[in-house]
Length: 453
Ligand code: TYD
Ligand code: MG
Figure 1 (cartoon, rainbow, N blue to C red):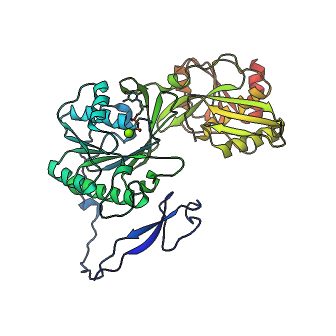
Figure 2 (cartoon, rainbow, N blue to C red):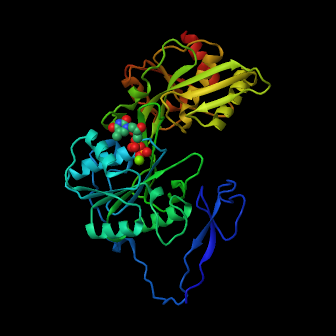
Figure 3 (cartoon, rainbow, N blue to C red):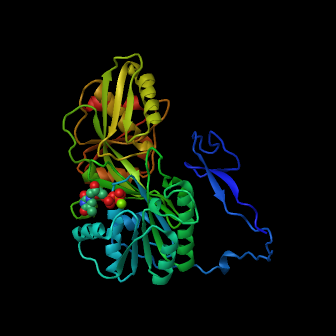
């Protein structure tokens, strides 16, 4: 006998499930995010079979070849290529270029002889054709379908048996038997579960596109992260042309890799040297600007850290950070005040990572300190100077990983001096063409720059 359908409440931010409605999610702490959701009844007349667990050695390891997309930037983020039968979520703001990226991937894959099915619920066939025309040559291995009904889609996939399916976007898909509107929490979860079943059952790789909106109006892909195998986010400033594809979760590889692209007339093109791109347009001889190096996965990327410090006209100093964590910025301002004796509490401070990149690595802390100090005194830092290091609460400059790689990247880009944590000097081999200055504290770093003139 089937039990009556039960109501559960699911948090739209983190996917936490609760039997009762709660104002605040106990898991992620967000308010008013729990939405009602009907759970299908479970059968109680279940036959219990005996299970036998296996040893690792008994399991056949599939060293199956991954499918290359012929885009190095994309392959790297996915851990070396596409794994057959996996479900991959591509998230991002609307209009950032998700459909473009997927259509381009389709083009490369269909030219390799793989059979693809691109299902769009957002654009007409005519619109897709216009976009494809700009991108270059496609062959007949790619089929297109405009449909949003999941029952029909499931049928079509099992008839056509393509190698790869693209769903654009998950928010437009719906299952008839569920009463809520497409894009709602319930529909999005159900749609993903169906696609997961298709991927695992038929061995079809499924790419799912999902919009993330800041307002959380539409069920964001956040709730889906734990259901799918791989989560990639396409980010970037809509007003600048570069885009970053970031691996957030990957069951088949490491997650902190990024791929860098530039949006062009004919689609996205790969950026092989992101540092050059990020430093493009760096002002010369202006105060409050320094180059630092962030490590994204295995890739060092040079970025320009910009600060602007002005006397505050209110009682409370204003602080804003673009591309950097606000709390960390506040902490660094406090460290500057206490350890360098600058009265930051009387000054507004604005921080910007130029190029629109979002960084979470503490290695650029030292860059934040030096650019802030430079703007405070309105004195430009020496040209061709680069710095990195984590800043601790007592003003110490702490060691970060892969110092050699960061310095190597700076030397390659023509930097002549590098201020880095003294602790990093031990692990460094001889580096040519760049003078390395080890520091223990931020005070020492500022003094070394003063000495250098
Ligand atoms: P799109 O892939 O439709 O975004 P999403 O699917 O994430 O909503 O990309 C839309 C933007 O990309 C649009 O503003 C136009 C721009 N674009 C180009 O600049 N060049 C191109 O070749 C294409 C196809 C799009
Ligand atoms: Mg789109």
